[in-house]
Length: 39
Image 1: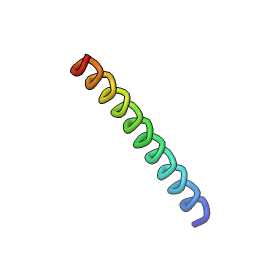
Image 2: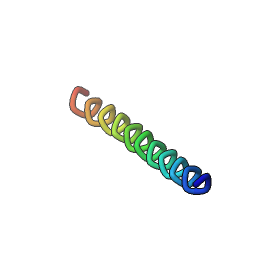
Image 3: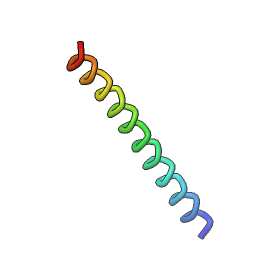
């Protein structure tokens, strides 16, 4: 059971890291697009 909980926690951490990474990329893309659009 402890092993399963640890594994699940690792998976959750990886998913959160991926979501944060995608959101960071989205923010950069939005900034670039708005900069190109308004310049």
